[in-house]
Length: 173
Length: 173
DNA sequence: TCCATATTGACATTATAATGCCAAATTGTT
DNA sequence: AACAATTTGGCATTATAATGTCAATATGGA
Image (spheres, rainbow over the protein chains, first blue to last red):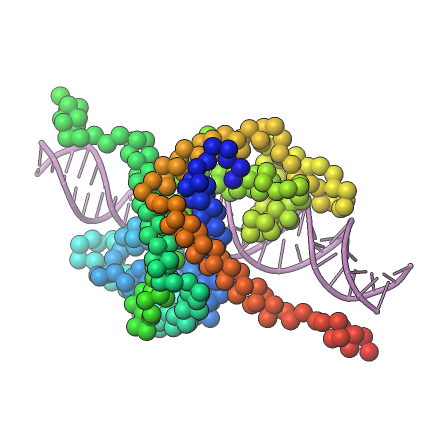
């Protein structure tokens, strides 16, 4: 990175980040091709997974938060999946508009087909790597994720300083 | 991932990939905010970096290949950077149309400002992580990248089987 | 030299993502 | 009960990315 004052650790983290950018994009296009035969994309697959793996069925906005994506994009993808019969909406006892999203049989089949295509591939992908180093990498990436989530949350909080209850009370006087 | 037949290693790699997706997106928005004051984005920054860090000046298509992005998108970004005076084109002795892309003073200043803003931040980001585990993570991600590049290249080669010289000779008869 | 192939920038089109705004609905506070 | 704040889906707009096509140019063989 041509940073004169970079410590080895910071330099190594920069290398990691740059490699992550490439690996991320490659993984997405790899996933796109892998699940294309089932009418899926990486993005659709991710959303189906979020639905399948959640304890209980959720409205769109919750899914978006869970996968860390924009609510509107998830809504668009969910609507597409609905048009194609992969998911359906169920009434939400707690909210009249926020319907619950569940998989149809067709959706479940597509998701399972994706998983079945993925499993042998990811096994091959892991060849030459030890369980330990994969887990170490996971821990590093998880730490990175936590740090960044913290920073971004902090920025958002700084932009619109939330009132505490005494401040709100003061406004009313 | 709810994969009945997954080995621990494959499962760990899946966890890593899912965490990578999140960390990647967070890093990009974090980078966007970091360099926005200098008229940059993560994508622009990456391209300026590719120009700065390359041994010799290159045309757009080469830059695109180096950063693993679409030629057309890099072209668009480069054109934007040109309009804003961050880069300029120089004649290419080896190609009449493929001009060489170089940074202007303004571009260099923006890039340096980005680096200066980035350096202390990445140092903070690395806190709590050891040099060893960062390097291990880097190696894992680099392996992942190589594997995926290999797979994708293989698929492309399979789509349009290239002729060898004898096949070409045979066609002519 | 001649010719097939590959590269490159330009242009067009489509797909996807990001952002802002709105009204309906819900939640929490007082 | 009343009211502010938040959440949610819908809609519109813009920004960015991806894909395809084309002509100009360059490259490598024969």
